[in-house]
Image 1: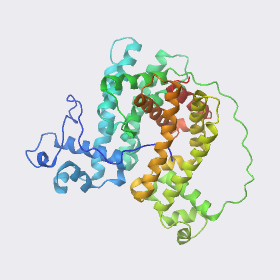
Image 2: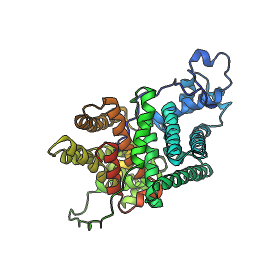
Image 3: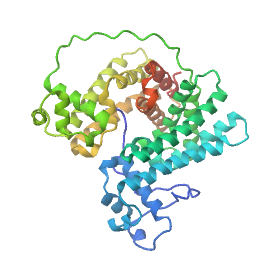
Image 4: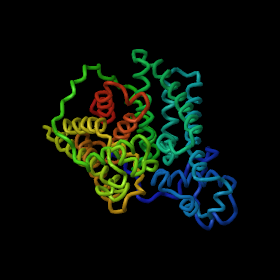
Length: 420
């Protein structure tokens, strides 16, 4: 159960920058939607869909859900988009467009590199605050798009990160290109973190806070690599058949996604016939629930051990380190993070949300104890930024295969929490 608190009910009205041609200020109600047709209806429908995708996941949202939230009929929606994938593509590519524009505007300036960096971070933070519903959607819902569009997203986002990396190396020439790339991905995760929670502060403070956190990340001195400890041999014996099934399902869901894996696939991976899986789990949804609870139990155990510390500062540092340690060694966390909660029974969804919130509250309480002057809302935004960095980088391309990622992520999280 990687920490990713999503709102229970999606917002269907939102305000955005009037300068954005695709996402203008609007509030779609049934009466206005069925009255005179606004000129930017396609962008408005996409914005409503983006918030639903963020709240429920791609597979948890249907065309009729989008139409109902926008106050239009299904046929009216199809006049603008061929299908749900077309809506997602519109939203995702809009997010990439925004990132490219902010990067080009900041780095094409003739200002000194520090001022360019400040302009870049401010532009990205402003976009994240004004359009929270698409702040990270392009990264984690993109796999639901056709292969050609996924390739375009990788190409364009990679080009943006290359530009950021070169800009950072200008300011910090002591970094290797790979280390600079890691820090740039972490900074991007700071902005994307606003999409996983609803905590907010006044805009005049929200944007500078995100800029401050991103700049803190970019200033991190990564630890000097140490020789990894030799693996500890296990003597636990053969796991039960139920555990084998659960482990097989976890691996398949992580590799291929929940919706493309069948019970027959899971049975084959566990070395049993597909129908035999039902002796242990009545459905794929039951498997996802079990995966979520297993992840929660492992996090709770690690947190309990971490909190045996002499003071709050040490406890918070150990808690952050324990999260990274468990995250990199527990595939259930990553599967739970990307899980489509729409497939779970409502009682189980509510239970897992409660466990997640309790876990985040532990971090926030400790952070407020360490820094009593820090407002609770800002503390929560910092905690979500730290958790999102760990979640994102543990699943990001070349970053996740770095041999010393645990120590590096722990160092970055400590910096974001003010413990550096």
